[in-house]
Length: 154
Length: 88
Image (cartoon, rainbow over all chains, first blue to last red):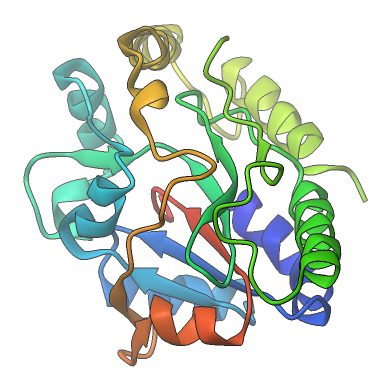
């Protein structure tokens, strides 16, 4: 929730750099619609039904039984929110993808309480735009590019 | 305005204090910590797509039931993709 609000705060800057934001969630549209209205978002929330796309980014994990039971006792019925019984979730992640479809920045963290500042995205997009300006309209295959902030070593 | 991590930290501190409004039981907090530690230790993070990989394309419904294709968005410029677990 806080992350969605923080992305909203940078949306106009992102648009100004010619880029777009989308947020993917396994939640069904009735929940994304309510959330979109509640937070007055100007970017889109997409329903990644049954985590098909999150799987392709290799972000999906199954909530352990002891946490599933806890969430259920709090009324956090993911089976209802996601239309599935397996209690799978995506790891929190952010990607910056260039026009050629290549990932230029990635942040993935198994600890959902640690998130990079959205201002990082603006910085990464600026770097991408500058590189684009310098090298023409394609930077595919360039090895010099890329910002990796995956917290894989912690 | 406070940064995102600062806001998250404040929330975490309030939640884990066990005090109102969350009244989170100690045992519940322990379970959450255990799950995060186990996921961290599983190394799943290392297997996620990385810088330099080709991003999978997708076509998904937005909040208004309009299909949105990543290939259409990328025609206009770079794309920021966030993954969000949910509203709960």
